[in-house]
Length: 136
Image (cartoon, rainbow, N blue to C red; front, side, top):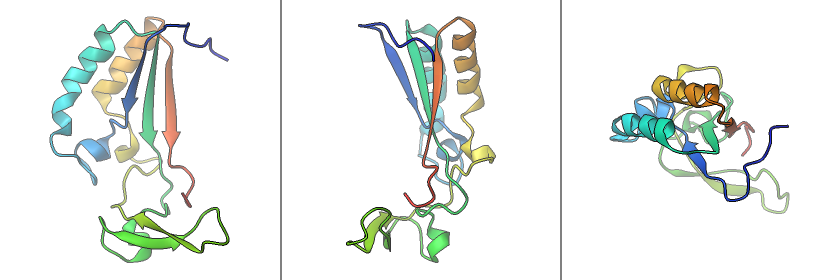
């Protein structure tokens, strides 16, 4: 197990800088413009740890609108994943995005290169993949 960040250490959290959010199926307007600044922050910061997150969905994820035959960007009742006493829960429906094994799920190339550079310098870099359970 890697050593933890020392007390008082500084961590950088890089959240979901993936192709589908930059210019893919769920692109955030203007998101691509932040990449050069984020690369500089990754490279120049005095980080004790860098953590990068990824949406990493299976193809049948419950939040995908096409799975339910509805339009994206609306609430839709889906089976409740945990409580049997509550049969459904409202879930925002999204376009298919960040599917495991696709280009859309990959972290941007410039960000990946900056993270690899930090790792080569000896900074611990960790990846957290989330959204893998098809029911939540």
